[in-house]
Amino acid sequence: MRRRNIWLCSAAALAYAFLYIPLIIVVVYSFNDSKLNAEWVSFTLSWYVALFNNQEMLTAARNSLIIAVCASFCATILGSMAGLAMNRYKLKFLPILVFAPVAMPEILLGVALLLFFLQVLNLTLGMFSIIIAHTTFCIGFVAIIVRARLQGMDESIFEAARDLGASPWLTFRLITLPLIMPAVVAGALMSFTLSIDDFVITFFTKGVGEPVLPVQIYTMIKVAVTPEVNAVSTLLMLLTLTMIIIATKLDSGVLRLETKK
Amino acid sequence: MALLEIRNLTRRFGDFTAIDNISISIESGEFFTLLGPSGCGKTTLLRMIAGFDLPDAGQILLDGKDMANIPPEKRPIHTVFQSYALFPHMTVSENIAFPLKMAGSAPDQINSRVKEALDDVRLSNLGARFPQELSGGQRQRVAFARGLINRPRLLLLDEPLGALDAKLREEMQIELINLQKERGVTFVFITHAQNEALALSHRIAVMNQGKVEQLDAPSRIYSFPKNRFVADFIGKISIMNAQVLEASPSHLRLSVAGLGEVTAPSKDGVKPRDTGVLAIRPEQVRITHHTEEVELKNNFTGKVQGFLYVGDVTTYIVELPNGARIEALLPNSAPGSAQFFETGDSVTVSWRQDAGTFLND
Image 1 (cartoon, rainbow over the protein chains, first blue to last red):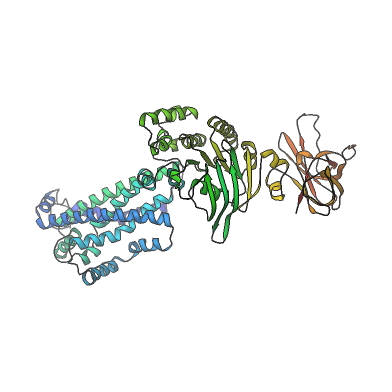
Image 2 (cartoon, rainbow over the protein chains, first blue to last red; image 1 turned 60 degrees about the horizontal axis):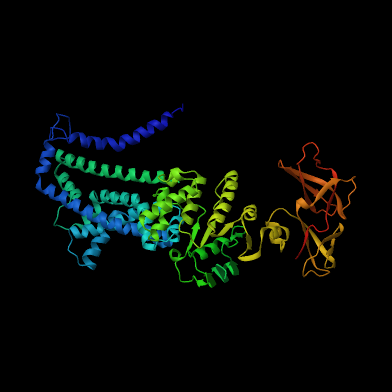
């Protein structure tokens, strides 16, 4: 038996407590039959009912889903291509170029995109501009995951395919794509979760027309933190959590394949 | 006509010349080995034959046809990679079927050919497994089966035995020789292990710094190394500085500094006053007690500096009066009657006049 270090354990416990207790409180109060987030009264689903009758909230949720699906779709394709290119061409500046938006402060990216859309492209802000903005910062995440997957692979596999008679396109379709697929899907899910709850960049690039979920939630708490906000947050959390769990499942599957090789 | 003809091939990476004007021709049905230390250019040469890399100058001809503009997938050449490069998302059967599928064979024909190939490499019941579920030796055999199934004109083998342990490697060497004989496919094998090259090949090209140092049958390379590099690289050899006193068609008379005269086999192109080295293999050197009468004329006394006992044989390192060291191999074939020497013993080393080689500087 290994002896556990008591300090290490309590430090870990505290860290997790700080991380998760606020989240748990949000979830718990979304089921509380009281308008105030102060004390537990009794269990109710009425906030969820109210939520599903709130037309504005539903529109915001629908818009956010459309944006997340479109942005993650575009980012996955472009990001996978970037990952493949970085692995093949080994250029020094390419990774910097692709990863920079990931590390860039969001507020900077938000302002830059806003100016670019308005002054350079003369674009009317709305769903379309948000999709472009989200695609921009998601590409880097997909590229990181796809490249990591490729880096762990034996490159002679791709040469072997060519050597045994496959054209470059068939090599991609039969060997490369199936092998990077777990990373591509993980990247897509990651992009989806990043897009659906992004506030800062969305706030700058949304314009005045369509409501979107994170901004809608922010508008609601400006008045008061109602249990309805708790309810929508809980649902959002559930969605993101599911995506993250699937993504990590795929990723660990990837790792398993490699260590066995 | 040779099957593969390499003509004045050169490949440079920046100002480093990886392949320096090499010409080799390989006959059909041959087991040909490119042998050399890492960085000698053998892998670069192999990659150019396969089509993964292109030469800066020179030609590669297969059946008389220039391969310059032919991509790897269109060359009737397959490669067995050092890492085996099996496709991890395909079963063993699917891996072996891959070249046939790419060639557009009919599905029922593919199935029967794959079954046959699996039987040939004794993996009949493992067809449904994935490569990562196999042992190293089994993966190796899948890689051979996959490389051979399409009956390529040429099979390139890139140190395929490098990742196996010694015992398994010996088994696979025998399997490889049989496989090559059965299929009649021409093999171009690359390795840095000289014993592997000697054991497997019909002919060996010893490479160093992008050049071919010697191209010959294994026994000729071992017995008659052309220069100091080949002598040093292949097997164990003792080397002593020497100068030619007399060169006759039957023998050479050499003067070894600090020792005296040695008689060595004659060699073309060697003239009196040439300087170089006398190279002699440990198994050609006899070692006896200094008191014992020796009938061989090439004999010198020395002191045992140390020995290496490896079971079947013992190698003794003897220091001669001139400071040179010479190795002598003594078989331990007759237990009890085998002679043993200790460090510090005074001994006589001797060798026949037709043993050893003089190598010009």
